[in-house]
Image 1 (cartoon, rainbow over the protein chains, first blue to last red):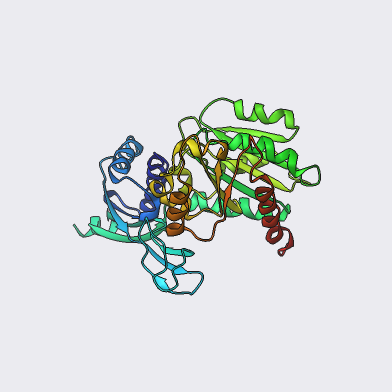
Image 2 (cartoon, rainbow over the protein chains, first blue to last red):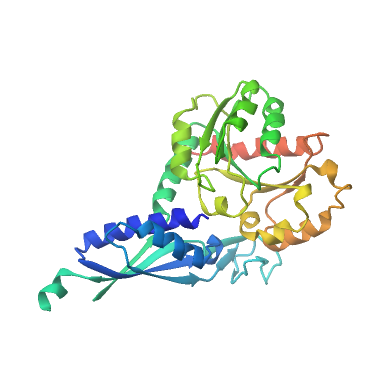
Length: 121
Length: 222
């Protein structure tokens, strides 16, 4: 259940970013989860609901997308797409992969109501 | 409504502290070893055997992560090493800030190794950088020879893999070849050390590996 630690961080960051943009309302937070993080989407949704409760972001929708893996072979420098259960370089046959994508959790975007919009409407 | 593009690492707070931990440990000239495995695979026993064997020239300290109790730290007490228990409460893994506070409680001066015994868990600890220099994964024979394939992310990132409790291999009909084949698909970089704290099998290889890992840390730029 490292999803709870992740959910708490998402809420902290989203609150800060919303403040920086002087958002009066946040409707959606988009998070991209790397395959290597082994995040269970359902568990992250549940953890997020708990973490966001009693913050002013309560009710915001969490959208989770997945970032696929990419790697460079440290033996032959070949760039390839590993699978979660196989990191063998198709060129040299070694499993000495340095992961270049699919290893992070990124807060990608937020859909917010900003002061300019409030002024326009 | 307006969409704000952000692209921020959600674990950046943890990763920043991890980087600070790594610098601090490197400056102190010691090697930090993150030990990860399921509960009961023999992490504490390995330390009970390894620390005296490394000898007084290579002094060690231990940070022990557990949900509850100070039992592991108490076990290490008789070795007269600095041992700090970190209770995570309900947390299933150690985080970099917890390790940072643990390091505050240690006198790092003159140490050669800090062992970080992570919470017993084969999933969550893999996702959190603690500021360690090397990651060691233990797989004990009684857990079964199918675990490498079941927990690929932990083994993919390992710098060394210890198969522990090898004295039980025959009894448990442990298929070592299966483990090697599964590891070869994930990680051909990490040496596989066959180990038994009971018989002493693999102890020399393990200690030599540990000693070798110190060179990049101690000979690197200050």
